[in-house]
Length: 441
Ligand code: UDX
Image (cartoon, rainbow, N blue to C red; front, side):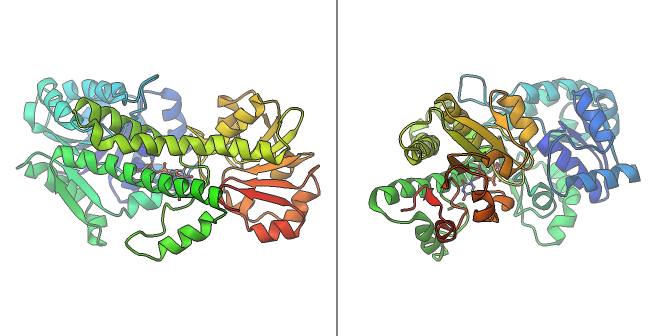
């Protein structure tokens, strides 16, 4: 098998995977049904912000190793290995994942497959999806079971997508027992990574699917755990940042994902834990995941608490007050505003009568699309101008490093609420600010 790879779906995951595979030396053809996206990618113009990805995209377009198309015929004719990277969003009004894009991709690809090949699912899916799709693939493809399916979940984080794709913690491949051709082909594709020491784990389909959702469930639980501790800290005068620092010294616990604050958002953790709960319900094991309802509830409560804290800071009402909001992206180093805690809080405060101006280094365009009702500034100082309170809601480095006096020179009142525990309270208090934070005295 030569390794001509295709990547179906060129959103966040697919565009990154395509460019990284081309970087490893493969010939890669990316497909999307969205013509605008394909035109932009073909021109080396990334439709979203991701550090390191655009140069990689441009370099590999220039060598000709990486191309993009909207044609399933071209993809089917070209690829030995087809990666499915389409989105699996939360269904409107439900917890369950919407598998419409995935089903559509398999239905479009399968009938066009005229030689043995491997189809590799990377999207995050409810457990049981791979087995169903394998059946559908064999049924619809002219080569029958010679079009094999493997499941190979992706663990990349936004903001670190290139690094996470080229240097993953582990590679997980789910395939039926005896599907040696599939696992051998993926071992070859990922040889540059395994040669560098990345573990390569072969499992059945269901385990591979579960590794992804359970990893995200664990990470979400860790964040909500420390945020629950933050609630207790607030009731007792304890400091959650010191608490998590002390917990982190126990290497059974570890320090990562113990950052208390506004909680998690984005296109993955919130919808993945909800889809996981929905699937557990279908499987009759909803009790096993009932704790995830609490994880979700703790997370949502953080946003409410942030609004309450800001209101307290303003003397009990937002009416007629000016609030500067720093951050719109769901986390730093991203322009993604999906389920963004920052934007949620900004919108709630505006609804309660404040005049809100938001600034974010990268996410303003996306924020404007989702919340045209909010006002936006071109810099942190712009957003904070004349404010009675400033809220730090996404911990971009430029906000962490802000000079309290410079910011203080444009505000009406030196009030700051640190929603991410990103600032040094002493430094801000010394500069005359009233500093409040989630989970800190
Ligand atoms: C996540 C997983 O990390 C990744 O493995 C998976 O493939 C996709 O989902 P991502 O959504 O890009 O990645 O962001 P991540 O860095 O995990 O952060 C998720 C959210 O948790 C952000 O809103 C972040 O602000 C928040 N977070 C993270 C905390 O509130 N505290 C922490 O300590 C860490």
